[in-house]
Figure 1 (tube, rainbow over the protein chains, first blue to last red):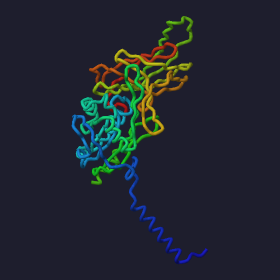
Figure 2 (spheres, each protein chain N blue to C red):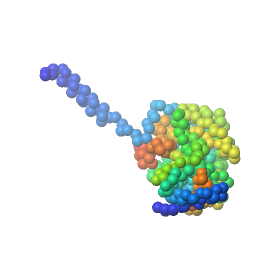
Figure 3 (cartoon, rainbow over the protein chains, first blue to last red):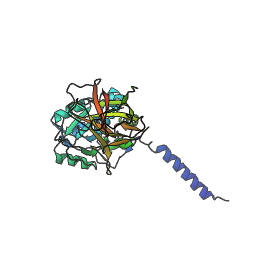
Figure 4 (cartoon, one colour):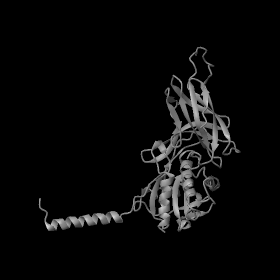
Amino acid sequence: MTVSGVRLSALAGMLVAALALTACSEPEWRTNDIRGQFPDLEFRLTSESGEVITEADMADRIVLLFFGYTSCPDVCPGTLSRLSRVMGQLSPAQREQVRVLFVSVDPKRDSPQRLKRYTAAFGERFIGATAGIERLRKVTSRYYTAFSYGEPDAQGNYPVSHNGSVFVFDRDGTARLRITANDVGGIPSDSAEAITADLRRLLAAG
Amino acid sequence: MKMRHVMILALCLASSTVTAAAPEVSVTKAWVRWLPAGVPLGGYFRLANEGDSPLLLSGVAGDDFTSVSIHETVRSEDGKTTMRPADLPLHVQPGAVLEFAPGGYHLMLFGAPKDLRPGDEVRLTLKTANGGAIPVRFEVRGPGGGQ
């Protein structure tokens, strides 16, 4: 078999290009990379202290956004406690740059006062917020999700369907990662270690 | 690990003809996730049917709470998660294990005592379809107790 000089150089060129690509490509994120797929952080809600809270209050912070409700004894505290463990693995200086925004999609039961007491159990950088249904619909649909209320039982308690994912935004408010921090139906989720590693990477990116 | 073997107390109130030996079960890893603000709490445990006949878990009762029930967390087709009352009874074959764990089956506990705190213990009774009662002590843990 004969190989012409042209072909050989073309082959060598491709090889160099392939090597360069390998060297320059970013390593994989351990959770789900959503850069370019989700809109920037933008919301207008009522915070757990009863004041208006917007993305401007999160300026220069890495934000972990989670939609849930407090009358949710399984998925919501499971997710928040895993995030609490992640926060515990960061240094105090790193932790100061991160906020967990727990948005209740159940404003009927979740008053700001109740949210404040609830989020305090997970850490001081956990902030509760909620709003009227219309505003909540706006912010959830912005992140391609929704919520709905189930039938109340004899005591009037009703379940709320919600997205179990946590959306992570960098300091510029750009959507970067989607985390699953609970094991619904036995489907493996992102471990505290994986989440911590990705947050450290985002923090190091400046 | 605390192992607690419990014999089902066959409450043969309706029938005096039940002569079969009560099935034996062991319930371990029984804990309740404490949360503040009076929100409902989740309870978890691992039940092993060590007897020779199927066990049908039909419900739960407990005087420490205003209302207790068996729920299940499920993921819908569009990726949302939701809770629903479990389809009872739950069948546990001889030698099989039924796990109540985060993200799946859990006890839904409303109206916990206001002074309940991590480190406390609560008592609940698991009920079987044939009228059996399995008393279980649950350890109350902090919000991150399961991980």
